[in-house]
Length: 106
Image 1 (cartoon, rainbow, N blue to C red):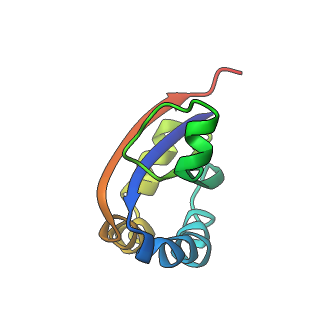
Image 2: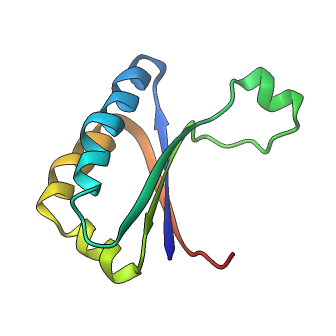
């Protein structure tokens, strides 16, 4: 199992549209892919809560977690027709994007 974490900076005025795009477009596109094992969209706690719990600072306020059975299948997703439609939507709402990949070991 692999996990791709994608970090986004989304302006407050784009937040509702970004969340709706994930549910209405991104996940349905993912569900068509071989080896797809799940996805989660995380929104960072509000600044007051983050400060209260001593959270590390980050410029990113959203994170997608995409799970696939193999990195090969994740790469097929990245090359798919569905990805070519939904990725520009996600990226286009962000002022900054970064990602990391992981092997799930536990």
